[in-house]
Image 1 (cartoon, rainbow, N blue to C red):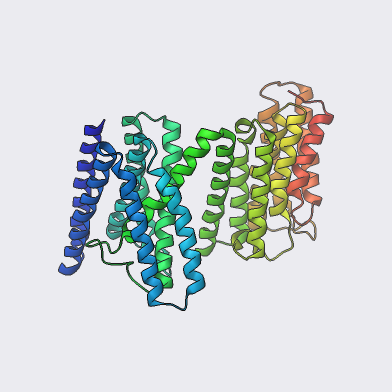
Image 2: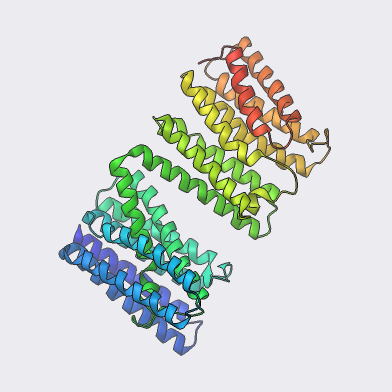
Length: 457
């Protein structure tokens, strides 16, 4: 195993060298020299960390502590240069220490998880930069980190996925565990890197220090590893203690990612009416798996309450314009998690998952389709803004979805009539529901109709 992983380091070092060479062809001699110094320094750092994990496990926690303490001194050094930012300094230091505690505990995990995390973070980190230098055009956040691009992020993510799949197979981790953990590790590595860049912009410095040739300070180099390592420790802790709590954490993380993605699209110029419906559809589809993951209703309730809280804070603090800035009065965003929670509890009470799945699928597909086509071909029916095309779209898509769920298991005249009746009545309910209340009335009306028609399959 160790030999195979060492060969993998050499392979990616070779690929990184090729990328550094071609990226340097567009740069002047000074920049090229700096990139090569950075490349060789990073290669030595990876080899050193790899050696500590594989052959000196007792030393690795000490190395992590050294990284943490040097990071503290680098943050203090910034404060000494700008003493007026005292409140901000203590806030940054507290967050850093909390993350660092998780990072230290991470250093005591199994060799398998340490190697997996090291390879994933280092590949993601290095190839983000190389891909950005080669193909980068669209800036992610120029105010915080002007060198980070969408192309660089995608290139780093692609290489990281290839890496953690291979490494996961070598260290014998399950495929599902490997993929889920790997993607989220990349996310936290990126968040750590972006957070460090934000701190530097606040203090108006390029690097935290000049301790590492070509890289700057320890936090310039290890910001991603510290954040990702702390997350891996938390993930492992939740995974070991309670699967249900881990699932709740992962569901909330996925929901947060959906919100961030839609906010990104909104800032790129997509109207909030569309990003709102995209978030609606993606988050609702995510919730389809809730009955299959949560055996305890308390964790499902925790997920629903936490999702509602995120949306409420986003509204109060003006953080989610992609969801809330639609220029009309609507409560739909807040009613969505409520309706999901109610549908989940009813399905548990009546012991039938169809009572949850069918309403949520209709809510995830029919409602956004009606919105998109209704906005494209405006012909208002009511003052609420509902349109002929939108209502017709909702009816047809609901008819198709209901038919797939009800007719396939039991195709007969009675079931066909139920499908048609459900589609007509629910479309009428959607039409007269004002201010986003259809997010609640649609699933409740479907559940009521299914129970009324005695379609408990």
